[in-house]
Amino acid sequence: MLHVTHFLMNMKRLNYAARFLRPPGFFKRAEMREKPRRKTGPFENPVRRFVRLKEKERIFSQAPLERRIPVAKPVTTELMKRIEGVPKVSSEVLERRLAFLLSDKAVEQQKYAKLRPGMTPYLAELYMWERQMREIRRIYRAQYLQKLESVTEGERIRQYREFLDKANENRNNAEIRRRAIHARVKRRAVMRDTLRIERRVTQAIQLERLSKRKIRNIYYLHKLQRGFDKGDSLSGPITGKGSDISVVHLAKSLGHPVEEDGNSKRLIKTGKHFFRDVLKESFELMPEDAERFQIDPEPSMTPSERASVAYKFFSDDEKLRLLESKIKMLNEMIDKDSEMHGKSKDNLYIQIRDHLDAARLAYLEKNHTNMIKST
Image 1 (tube, rainbow, N blue to C red):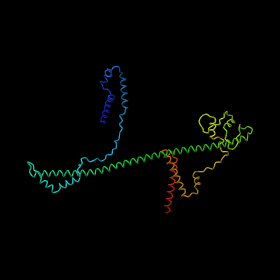
Image 2: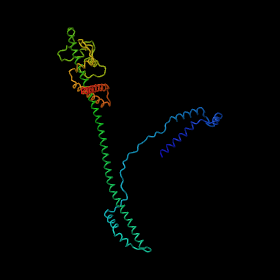
Image 3: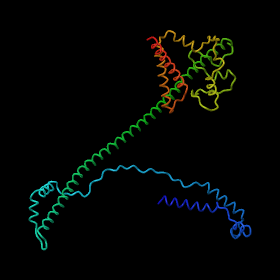
Image 4: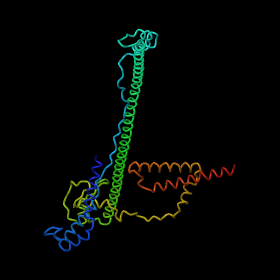
């Protein structure tokens, strides 16, 4: 019914659109030229009417048809139905009655059939025999239905158990897949948190090293200043090896108007604050952080020369094991990136792995060829 209604609605829309798509005929054009008010009505401009209908036609042609979303039929499991109309007579009674009808006593029953007015002995025996045949057919049918019911009931029980086992198996498989997804997401989250924590720890260690280096440079500059200018000293000389640097004294010595701030925090925060700016600048690399002596550059070597020097004392088996271990490490890094980001984040690992694998295969093929030639 829904399809018929949809078809009729589409036909109605097409007929309605044809009214605007058909051009006017000869007589209608003539009448529109002579007396357009008869067709358009009073107080309507023919040009505006034509523009309105064309605009309506354009909008109608752009309007799509009604969207019909296909819906899949629900999957229902049809179990075997029960057998209806099974006689409730016990099997012992049916067998006893069947044994009587198939014995010689049935013939005697036909002979002792009751005569009625207008009935011959032959007809009486015939009617008794027909009744016995009908009863035998009913017994056979009842026995067949009872046997069919027992077999069907066993099959229904087996089918129902199979359905329950399959449903439990599907449920368990879905749970296993869900747990695998949860474990993968959890492992990825743990890996991301671990990498983030490692980055922060590494950053803190690097900042600590840099700050220690800055402190050593400041101590060194202070020592130079005391050596060159002994008369002009700070307001409080720094005594002891492990004494901290006073930012206030350094700023005063540089000529900056600052106020005492004894409770300055170590954490670098945003905002316009002199002590924070000085602390930020202390973590930057300055010209005085460069090496004190110029280091002569080592003679450059090609990668093949460096490899020959590094692996000169390695045997062929050791080189092959080293190559396989590097390929294994690269595979682990690629798998780790794939688990975290869904794909390998850096294609450089894949390229290096492919080059190493190609070198390993070339080495194995060369050894195999040499072995064949030697034999």
